[in-house]
Each structure stands twice: as C-alpha cells, then as structure tokens.
Amino acid sequence: MIALIKKEGRAGLAIPGDLKDEAFCKKLVEQAVQGLGGLDIIVNNAARQQTRASILDVSSEDFDATMKTNIYAPFWVIKAALPHLKPGSCIIGTTSEQAYDPSPDLYDYAQTKAATMNYVKSLAKQLASKGIRVNGVAPGPI
Image 1: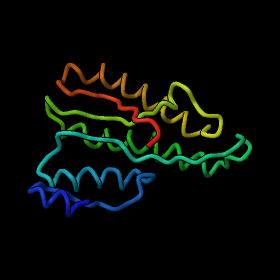
Image 2: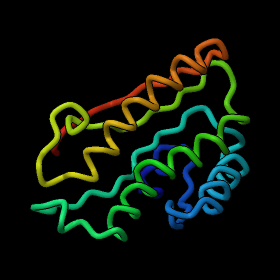
Image 3: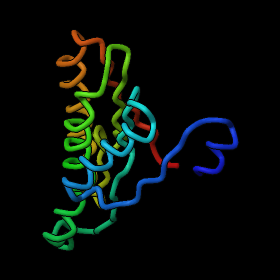
C-alpha cells in the first residue's frame, strides 16, 4: 500500500503496532505528525469483529479486545491528534449498519459501532466551533 501511495508522488508511512495499547496510539500520532509534517485528517478505520452464536460464547478477553480496538483506540488517537488539527481538518469514524440493526451474532462489535456513531455526533458538536469536521461512514458488508 505504501508503495502505491509513493508511486502517486504522495507521502505515506507504515507504523506497525497494537492499537489496543494507549502508548502506541500516542506514538502513532506523533510519528505521523513528524513523518508527514502535520495532520489534516484522522480516519479511525481499524476494527475487530468476531461472530459468536451466543453472548455466552464471548469471553471477557474477546470482549475487552473488541472494546479496546474499536472504542479505546479511536479515543486515544483523537486525543493525541486533536492538538495538531487546525480549522479545516476532519475526523472520520467508521460506523456500520450494525449500529442501527445489529446482527445477533455480532454482540460486541455492534455495540462498538453504535458507540462510534455517538462519538461522531458528540465530537461534531464539540469541534464545529473550532472548524474541525467530524463525520461517520457506515459502509456495510464488503
């Protein structure tokens, strides 16, 4: 992917790490700011999804990993990025049809997508006066 970005004459960085780790999320933003010379847009697209027939099949470890990936990571990334965003910048959260019509076998994932929809709405109201747009996209199954 980075090679394709660079082939088009654009800058791209690959910053591997674990989004379930708050320290990495902060490091990710700082490395992006340094490597790209600033930030204009934040896209919180990473997510964890697993199917389980019953809530009884969702372990606490699985639930925690889904929450940390889908809810905590965007929170940490946005907090770290916000001081670098100027008027005209944008934050995009990836929600899902699961926020509106959850599947019975996506118990934990669906909760995170509803939470994403709401953090997008809340942040949009909070940051509009600073000239920072906050939008959500719900691409559905692909």
